Image (cartoon, rainbow, N blue to C red):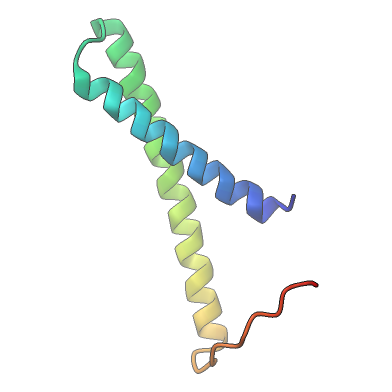
Length: 79
C-alpha cells in the first residue's frame, strides 16, 4: 500500500472516529470526565482532518497551476 493510500485511509478513519465521538457526546449520557476526554479526542481528530483537507487542497491548487488548461484523459487501468 502506498503512503498516499495510507493518508487517505487515515483521513477516512479519523473522520469515522470523529463522527462516533460526536454521536456519543450528543447522547449526553457520559460522566463529565469521560465527556471531556471524548471532547478532547474530537478536537484532535477534527484538527487532523482539517490538516489532511488543507494538504489535499494545496496539492489540487499546485496541479491546477501546472496545467490549468489540461483536458481530462481516459483512465487505463493495469490489466
